[in-house]
Amino acid sequence: MEGKTTPVSADTGTDGRADSGGGERVLVTGGSGYLGAHVISDLLRSGHRVRTTVRSHGPASSAAASVRSAIAASGVDPGGRLDIVGADLTADDGWDEAMAGCTHVHHVASPFPSVQPDNADELIVPARDGTLRVLRAARDHGVKRVVMTSSFAAVGYSHKDGDEYDENDWTDPADDNPPYIRSKTIAELAAWDFVAKEGGGLELTVINPAGIFGPALGPRLSASPEHVRAMLEGAMSAVPRAHFGMVDVRDLAELHLRAMTHPAAAGQRFLASGDRTVSFLWIARVLAEHLGERAARVPTREFDDERARKAVGVTERVPILRTEKARSVFGWTPRDPVTTILDTAESLFRLGLVKG
Image 1 (cartoon, rainbow, N blue to C red):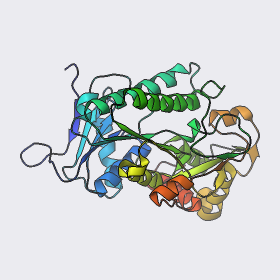
Image 2 (image 1 turned 180 degrees about the vertical axis):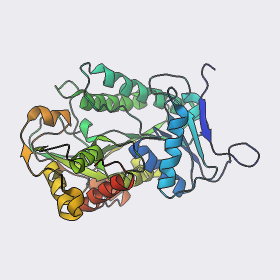
Image 3 (image 1 turned 60 degrees about the horizontal axis):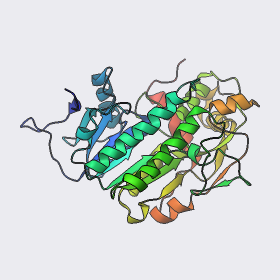
Image 4 (image 1 turned 135 degrees about the vertical axis):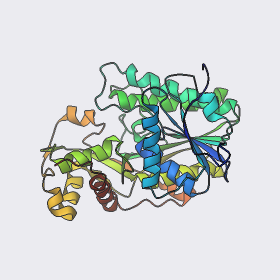
């Protein structure tokens, strides 16, 4: 039916209706994704009721099953507190119904390509317009705050003097960056502009994570753990010479929850990264040092290729990411990156995602 949410799955009580459970209802967009599953699990663990969206076209039941499987893998029993509905960032249908009754929103969903498209608008348009659809529906339904997952891509990919970055830095959307970097920048800029001009009291908080690593809860991986899998499978004979920040997906989910309700988070952006800048070669060496024969195929050398670096959204410089803001406002302390990488690898083995 036009304008109605596609009902994909809902845990129900004995009377057949969705169990109201306890706690406020929170919407998470992109619940079948790598970060989305962790955010949902943490919300359920903290007593909230959760509604999450999966794409409304295609095998919706398969997407819903993927969400349920990931939540089960996290060790959380949602009972009747998880509702899964269909809504797509590229269409208006479904967002009003998905948003109804929610007090807060985590906008986690965003397109990420396995290959950068020739036409940048293939990424930019859905990222920007999808963000505006979510914000518009949140405003219209009286949502208090939206926590949006942006990226370091919107912070650190334009020239500046020095290599230190914080929340005051912005990537220039006009710069010649890969489409993904431009899409994240343009989508975040559009979000701030919308809230300033049309928000009607809606609060916005933005999280800008560096490369997201950490344990997977299911087969849908983001680009960063995909690199770990490729190293373990021997698919990379060498790695690009590149340095970047790293944040554990569990720490990032925790940061989202803290940003959801903290009074000082409204109208702010927060850079999220661990204690050190790492490189692909550093990751390979950690895997080799700790995993023995299971890491026998990881690469042992770097190559210098600017095009390869651009393809994965990194540069040769060694950036310094200042995360004092998140630490001081929330008391946030990220995990050691060695733990993050090893837990990433162990989850890939446990899920059977490493071939050979």
